[in-house]
Length: 303
Image (cartoon, rainbow, N blue to C red; front, side, top):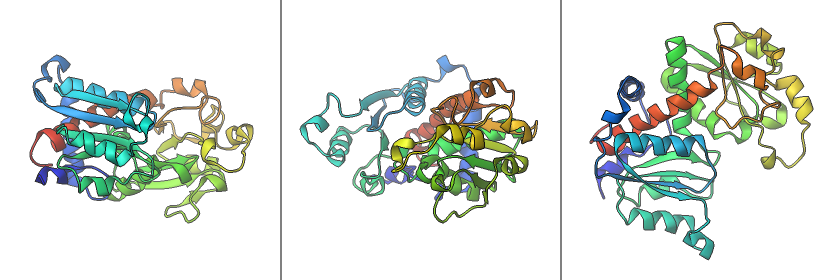
């Protein structure tokens, strides 16, 4: 088995601050580059993008990253038109694609697929593009990269994550990355949206949390994952990022959301025009971070 499999990125707790710094440095270089001159790096390479769950930003940013590097993406979106419709398992699908020897695999899946076990069965790196509730490493990295860009550093920042943390793989990855980069994380939301045993501070009041935060990040309300109904009107009033609610947030703070946004629930449309709001810059950062990860983990020999 190739040693390059050790380049898989399944979580963030295994990365050092220096390694994350290198990812950010490479992303910085791409941010200032002529896109048309980048496409020689991955000439002749292929990357399999296996998205067993729906995605817009993550899938398209990985495709864009591949295109900018000259890597040919092999795309699989859901079950339609594949042998999954005939009863093939997700694991068998991945192993069969791996047998075609792409240079790396990008996988988005639910908790029913074990990416850690798969990484020991294939010879190429696996990049986690969202794994059940376990984590979404590239999203947390692009969030941190955006914070660094606008606030100068991630260290000692105070990130308030508001909303459906219990079902959020983005929050799970931020818990890991905070320990690597030295920022604080706190939570706010209805009790049924929060972890049963939170490992970070929890604010019962959104206003208290916003007064504390240097970054306020809303999460999508994942009602499809809840057994009982919850009033979206009540949620917006108590925890929604409305113009009124955000008055307690510092003028120097950032407003973020990993998307997709349920406008009028987690965030009002007017807030997207707030100069503190960095939702679209997050998307731009996502392409740069995924370019950097593909180069470092899949086109080079070492991270």
